[in-house]
Length: 143
Picture 1: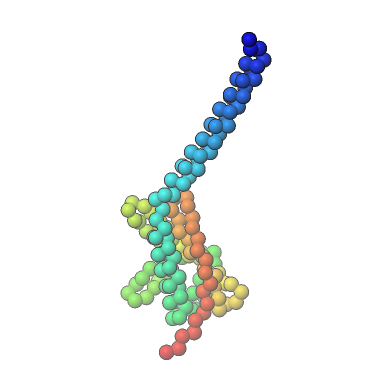
Picture 2: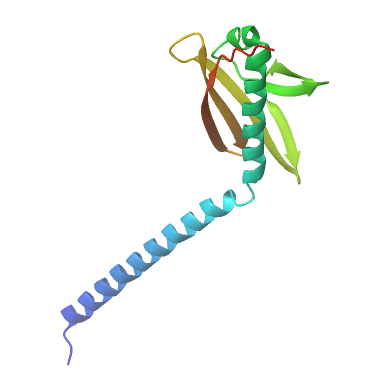
């Protein structure tokens, strides 16, 4: 014959084990939900835009360093092509791909001298923000 105290201990232990299993399941489901939220994020769009910005800014340093040097450090900029030239505008660039909307911009800041700039390019998708950083040196090109 079992005592009433032993039965109570078994119920408490059973409820404790159930609570632990439910806690693990809730943590797993939360992790799964967070990982699926960014599953549609297209890394190729972000990487190609980061490369496009880097290459365009390097090209601009060869032809128009004064433009790069005149940019404010606390302003978001984006690039667009106009003919054979790159144009810098304030704000963010909006790229739509398969009904997904991405926003790209860059900020520029002096590094330690006026001949090197520190560039931060930013990609935004939903509430995900990805940044890429690089140094932009002044290039003296003579023809």
